[in-house]
Image (cartoon, rainbow, N blue to C red; front, side, top):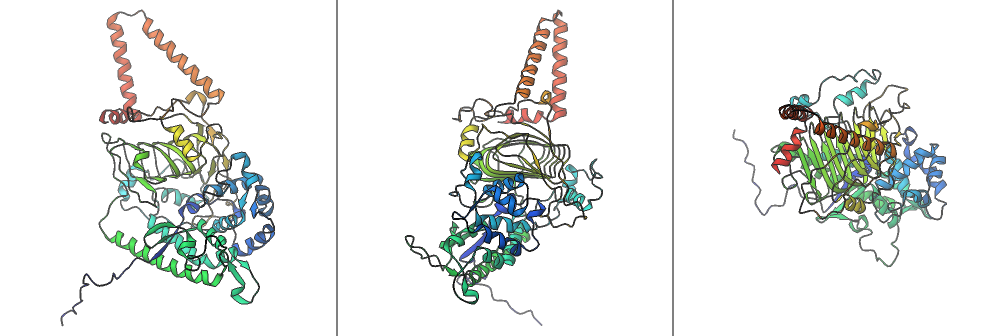
Length: 567
């Protein structure tokens, strides 16, 4: 019997998988940069825990909460309460919120909006998706050794060793993360709306309503595309607020109506994301980034994958030098993933940055105004000018920091060192001003260690280890501190005014630096005045060149010369 004939779709037929008119996306920032491994913030029943907290704080006329109130209500230390507010400020959806522009000394007097705090605390119960295995495990094994001297350090924490040996290498895909976060929001939507709603006179479901202002606070967790337009305000996309008179207060809407519309929209968005990811998975494979050869590593040739909403991905760079400047990046977020034995320069103003699964590399970030997260890295030197930085599950790394807030250290770390910021490029101060990083405050050596176990991963952990504190950092020996010179690729095209490191060096590092300069000058003088015959001087010069060349190859810095030569 012949197979039945399946009619082909004609050009006039409707699309079998049409794009929904309104698509909801989860905001990545709270999930990427807003989760804290503090056990007292993780509630088994968030609604039961947060409802009385909301009622207690709702009496405030300004609806804003300072760190003292957060510490008292959550029974956490003042340091952790301050951390809650600073972390929340770094992931807020509204740039007009006064907390976003508050000076460090004014954070407590400004406080955080109660509704944003409630949503922030609610998602502390979120569990991250487990990463997928790499498509080419042999390639990963080439740069990630299967064993390490540290693998037996926490023998009781076999799940942590599992995380170190696997997830440090393989970050979940953006599509997988988005689908996972949409499913989380779908599951918890009713609870979230109940915490944002307000009672009115009446009976049943109609007695709880949501104002337009309260609805807009959902923008902390979700964002909308409507009829092809990206980043549409929630109230404009929602049918019950879309036509509200801007000069008149909008009429509150029953929570049940909001819930039904959001649930339906999230379901169709989730279906769209899943179908899109499936089509990409089954289609021709393409890397998130192209490896850049040493000769091609210049601001004009650097390539990376990015979209308007999604971050710019720099992935899989190996044994290369890689450069991106502001004109190469059309969005405000960067993720550097699985880069090894390379030097990477991202000389641009950014809002967010993630460095994940890198080893034996030097990574320079320009100015980051919101947050940087460095995770699952080994033997990496990271140079950052940022408002805040979080370091998680890293080994033998050195961080040269210019940071306005205390560095957050969490997870299973070993032999981490911190030092003051040590470089500059011509547009650095301009980029710092653009994103709100100030050079007069540098808390590089005030690391705040928190939990060694991350309650947001999807692994089970042995009893009793959840309260353990992460290993903190040590300060780099001043005698080992050196300036890092960024090659001037932009000579003749750059208009920047930065001529030196904008962050003042602590006296002990400044003194050591000056002593090293003096020692070098003395050695040069001794060599110049050495009573040697000309042929002996030539032999000495030749020997120095040989040793220098050997050092260039042994350290990998020879690639920097190739990079400059190729440019």
